[in-house]
Length: 400
Ligand code: GP9
Image 1 (cartoon, helix red, strand yellow):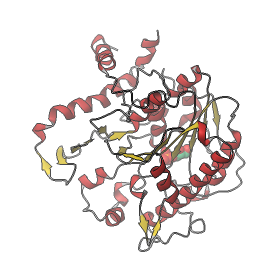
Image 2: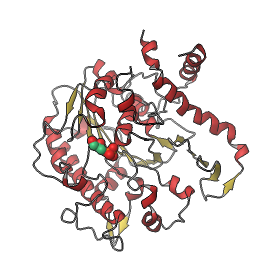
Image 3: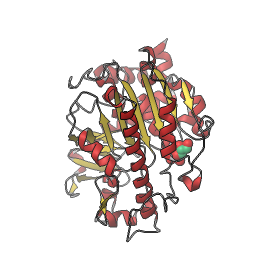
């Protein structure tokens, strides 16, 4: 890193403010279970189709716990692995290619490392080939001690991804059986059944998706309805094992369900005009946090994104984590989310980077870009700084 680059980095971290102490340490010493759900996108939540809820179990969890309904994904070329990266490091995944493939041996400050230092066992569960997305190498740099991959699961039932995915029901059941609960644990469960193209759910769901049957969207709604039922069973299983009351449970979607090229039915379902403003507004994923011993029942709508999850968990668990790029969502007041195409969503406006246009977040009416330019540039700088730090393996120098 040049001296100028190093200064940029140091200034950023030095000037980061503690936003408040709400919920600080309320989950200190508790277990942590993170469920990263494949392709779970925000629009599926609280949605009914032909009189039936698509995600009844997630809706109930959202109601009983803390539900972040304005939470954006920030993945780029690394898709699912980028979402893992964001959660584990609170850095932005690089803007070109996949950070898991390009920078797997960098030094990273991570949540698993911080928890390992506090006596936790850190594990990742994903029923697929361990070399996919270079996970087996990258997990070492992230401080994940145990990687439970498809080599360790009994592949007893397939559902999703054209029939190649271990069913989420079996995956959750087996994962809970494998977690060592004699010590505090930090376990991340990465699901697969709702992977595109969602074509495997005819018998697994009786959701009537008319008029979208046999379309990608219709198949997706069926797939998510199936995954939702598996999440319901996972929560029951946690309760049966007496884990629900001493475990922080975090559930979120990793990235979008439908690419822009397949979004026409989505606009129809949402009853909105097909345009960039509506497309960007839809790029949210649900986030639910269950904090044992803390009464939930709250929906938090401050604009936020995946980079914000780590500092939020760190605050709950009383972990000092100075190298987060994101902000603690329980204490953040002025919401913003920087998407990885450099679009920006705040509580007031949306900046569409592809057309350099600013819209009022409430109604999509155009706003004068000059009034927002400085703020947008400041927010965009975060993505550039993160890229720079990853490219230069900046934390290696910090560690020395
Ligand atoms: C496979 C899974 C793929 O391991 O992570 O998900 P993708 O990145 O294609 O969404």
